[in-house]
Image 1: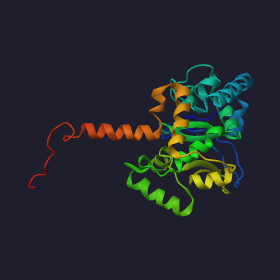
Image 2: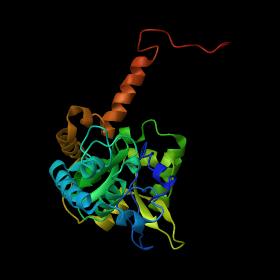
Image 3: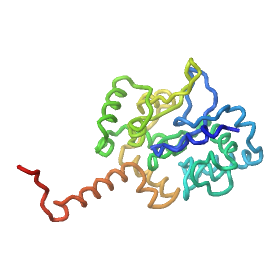
Image 4: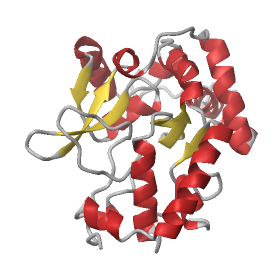
Length: 273
């Protein structure tokens, strides 16, 4: 079984960022997942999986992603990988659930599937996106819309500038998750020559040149509408509002409404001014 320490590393993705399980990789091959939680030994973790849960869970996950176009890794209410494998709602970290190794196994398989891409699309949480929506996702991510940069922390701005210069950087922590949540970067797991797992951020352009076939791309407004429709299918208007272009704008409106001038009051004046 995975150690207690390994079972606590999931809570994060913008990203409280939710993590995906990791499996051994060669140094030259990258996973389509965001950085996963440790298992003390991935081979042991997969050998402890329940074959019946894995088989049924994989079919449910594969069909749900195909039908919805997007699927969360874990969520208390929306369709998600953990619940589809476990056959019940999974609250909190799925590493604490009895089906954790089966969830690990299915997630690892999903990470290797050619039609699945892990992003931070909904609430900055791990969101799997089906290949048919990749053109829309790429168009929205590379549009350079104001919502993507509004309110970014100085650290995230500096990291983004470096990423634009270099095309890919190793990075982790809050600023890396911040960029992924604004679709300013896509994260992937790499297996280093030293045998370690690390997270690498790529520009969307570099990712697309490597992993997407050339083809027509929708304009940004149409791309966002396509992703809105998929989110609506997944869970209604409340999920649409959790997509980043809506969430950032909603947060901006709430900030304006909370300001003294928006309430009709006078802005505070510093003493001695």
